[in-house]
Image (tube, rainbow, N blue to C red; front, side, top):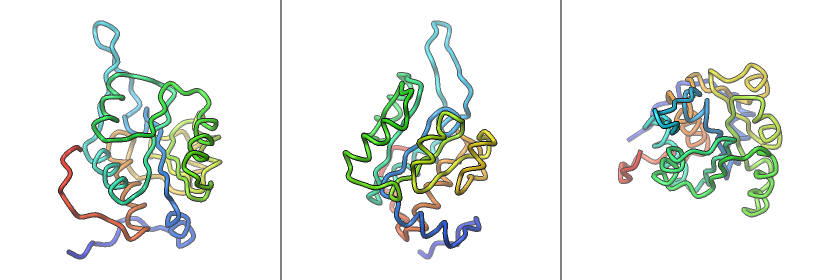
Amino acid sequence: MNLPSLPYNLEQSLIDKIKHIKLALFDVDGVLTDGKLHYGPNGEEMKVFHALDGHGLKMLQMAGIDVGIISARRSTALQTRLNDLGIKHDYLGVNDKLDVFKSLQDQLGIDNAQCAFTGDDVIDLEVMQACGTKFSVENGHFIVKNIADWVAPLTGGNGAVRAICDVILYCQNNYPLSTSHSVQ
């Protein structure tokens, strides 16, 4: 099957940057979720995730791109979701995202140009600026969107991560069409 063209206009300089991505890192609240915090009657935190985003993260992994999560918050719901998706680079409850990024970068032996980060708030700025490619989401803070190389035209928790995954896979000419994996 021939793939249709991406519905987004990307400048060639951005496509060239994206071709080098080997590590795609994501924030959680406001990126993988809509940013709202839901608490149950016993104080337990609940999160809602979009299946399209999960499938996009799985496709990145299938394409050989390392996927990681760096979040200031920690929750059982999030850890369960990351386990379901097979994400092995998960750093939860992190205040210094840049330090975690540098450590992971050293561990994987990759340089800044091979890393991408998707963030939505000012806590993400330092790690975003250290990465070769910076993504944000439509509902991101205006300062973060201003430094992003590309802002997904969807909001966090509503398919924005999938749009970013699609852009990466298309730019790398590595879009998998297999439906052989079941966890979304």
